[in-house]
Image (tube, rainbow, N blue to C red; front, side, top):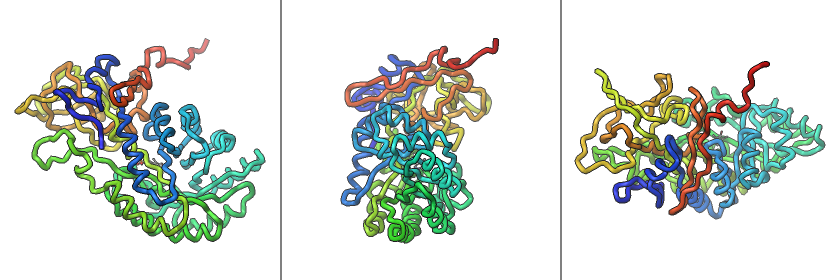
Amino acid sequence: MHSFHYRNGDLCCEGVALQSLADQYGSPLYVYSAATIRDHFLRLDASLSGLDHLICYATKANSNLAILNLLAKLGSGFDIVSAGELYRVKQAGGDPGKCTFAGVGKTRPEIEFALKEGIYCFNAESEAEVRFISNIAADLGVTAPVALRVNPNVDAHTHKYISTGKSENKFGIDFALIREAYQRAASLPNLQIRGLQMHIGSQLTSVQPFLEAVEKVAPLAADLKRDYGIEFWSIGGGIGIVYQQSLASGRPDWWSAPESGVSPLTIESYASSLLPTLRSLGLRILLEPGRFLVGNAGVLITRVVYEKRGTAKTFKIVDAGMNDLIRPALYQGHHEVVPLREPAPGAQFETVDVVGPVCESGDFFAQDRSVPPLAAGDCLALMSSGAYGFVMASNYNSRPLPAEVLVDGESAHLVRRRQEFADLIAGELIPA
Ligand SMILES: *Cc1c(COP(=O)(O)O)cnc(C)c1O
């Protein structure tokens, strides 16, 4: 589901009109819906009822403290990819004992910090890392819980930048080499072999690759349970969401029913196709969804600054840039362009590029897109910007980071203030 609908002509997030937030907090502005996040978490959780499981939210998708706190209160664990994310989880009230630590390049300070905080498990991505963790744990006189990440070599059929489960990707240990890797890991001191992990990619829009990977790796999981007493198998994240409205009606329907849109992947189909295999293992199953929990829960509000009509194209120049939301530039991500004020019936649509102010030709949000009338001063929402949005924002072009607001029912909470100029130079020094 999502919680963005027109009410009396105003696009609202739950009970709050987005224009009122833009007026109060300025633009560009990220707005998130608490109800959407709760609904997605609880539905995923319910779809796995009867299975011993833990949802470890992929913190990197959106690591605002308010969102981590909301998920922690629902009982979520966290999949982290840096010590900084572990720090955030702790500050937000999350439980380190429900944290798994992923990533191919963990450093000594990060591993020491995670050991001191007592995380649930390191998901190690190479044998060199396993040896390193063993050494550090020995230095500290503790036992480190580890799982190895297997690369099952299945095709996730997603954008090449977010595919992670093929042999040519840098992630995990080759399926053909994983058993020996466990053997050697088991002989190292100060390690507890606690689990097995995999993650084949992001924004998967069909169940098939998940099913293929689970069926391929399940016998390995069973053997590792028998041989080393592992207690969990994390099957990763990657559940895709709908970004693009269905044009079946021939006319934009403003995203009225995103889950009946273009993705055949529903949470119910995901769970029901994987459950039989997972249940039979008797292992605790971990999931690491990021995008699924927060993607459709957020929008980026931006204001049209200028219109420019060229010979080839018409440009709507907005006050958000690729530094605020990089998905279109980085992986051809699609975001629906929805005006905050509902277009009049019969309004004339026109084909335009929606672009930002940053000095890069990659700085666009939509190209050759049919949009309703948008005049200078009008605000629009870039939909489905809750995941991999703000977290990838930068100060490129010395643009202060946008503010973030969390809406819950009728109330709106500022959960990150807009940066000021002083923030731009904080920490910088001119040599004497
Ligand atoms: C990024 C990542 C995830 C989350 O992916 P989504 O597509 O956002 O669900 C989960 N696990 C690992 C190891 C990741 O790197």
